[in-house]
Length: 412
Ligand code: CTP
Image 1 (spheres, rainbow, N blue to C red):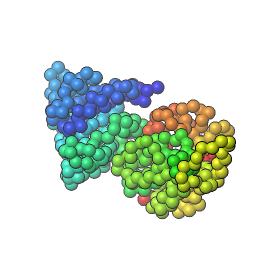
Image 2: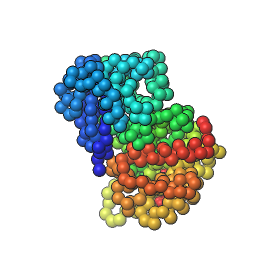
Image 3: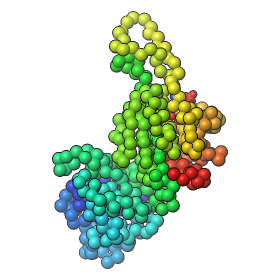
Image 4: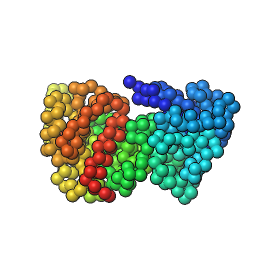
């Protein structure tokens, strides 16, 4: 099944240079199965044409469009299951925060039913992004329940490098999926996450054999990265400790890069006291070479024996040192007898919540866009989910963490 099959998305496009990317966003939403309608402001039309957007979806660029009734915006807002404004300009942030609806995108956004999530992807020069007025608008919109995708860091149209770029299309799509699963970020939800400190581990590790070779595994790191994004979007402060991956660093979080299991342990130990919740999604090596060679091992005839010793168990160490009130979430990748093995792992690793992946299920575990997970909940219940994109799985995991934090009243 496509990721957004049959989902109804209104895309707003506003006056930022990144508006020229909007047709790609619309196209990708459709490729993933979504039905799309577009609302565009007149400023955005300085950067992208109505024809380019209209090639893919119906477009409205006026507050009073000819041929549509005066209440077209109510109908569009009710039709939407989610609204994404990408890019969202500084002016549009200010207008939305103040309840001003004088462009097609702000008009539809202001008409959304209270239960329909609004996802904003601000994109502008760093100077604008860092203006107190813009930050006030963002904070206000967060309080009002909007999903804010932090701008990415990189080259800007002004020629400088800084924060302000429109994130990759994949990030926008992931957040739209997240918003569809989780809905509006209500004040009661945000209270659970605001100020909450979350440490996430992700990716494989690399255990050196010699100066140019290493032992590793097939983990892409994606599951841990999207979990970091999901809890960040709910309002948590996030540290992501990652082994080597090909993924770009998510915006708005503290990132720590490591290679070996030993380095991962040393880094997470530094953050352990700080963290309220620790999510161990990394596929850490179980074995590491006993004597890594300094140079390059030469080819020779005959067998070559590589001696391995057990690597440090990062999660077991965290579990042994955990402080009172700290929540621990572990993963288990199993091949067979998964239910029994996972329950044993939940107990032996001393975690509150365990996420089970099983290779036997298909579409579960390493690599791939999708995952199939089961959750072993703190109260002993097990919840099984159908195969879905990793971002959707991340929302389910975040929901289970949220329930636990709420039930134990562990306020930050
Ligand atoms: N883990 C860890 N350090 C290791 C190995 C695993 O912290 N050296 C953590 C993983 O991050 C995961 C959990 O332990 O959260 C379970 O990982 P998994 O590979 O399923 O289990 P193992 O402990 O390696 O046991 P086995 O391979 O025998 O199933």
